[in-house]
Image (cartoon, rainbow, N blue to C red; front, side):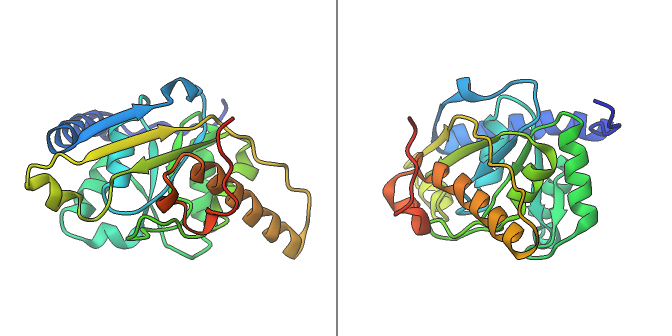
Length: 229
């Protein structure tokens, strides 16, 4: 790789600590199960796409993922006490939901081209319910510019009542299901058709993700689910 991006030293120190702490917290509070780790293309760049129900999703995925992930997070969360400090300590890349930010995409593409895997929630924010919303086309643009595979990942059990259930001693189940990597179709269209093609590719990711999720999580993709072969 010719790109010069490297994880800053302070994040090289803070990330392993944060991941260890959160693995411990989730294991104490819940019952964690992970499947599909054999599908990960270790040592190569790729995009990890997750469903996003609550604030527990990104730390769960990042804590238990076998490789260290770069992460995109909503910029407004950086302003929240506690959450903001954790995001900054990990080195999460802030993104303004719904906005097209050329400098941000340039930074993200630079990270991937330097060989690092990236975590993204294609829905663009928390759904607050189990049912998935329609994806935004940003993930398709990132893949279009980098040519890397997408890892569809299903997170189950991270509902907003997880904390309340956990402190009652229920140890609610948490599950991470890692699908096989998928390559998105090349986009050759121009103008409005190009935008539509990106949306179709983003939807394709979510359809694969829906195939890893229980029925009540599939949301708008319930009728177009692609199940694992």
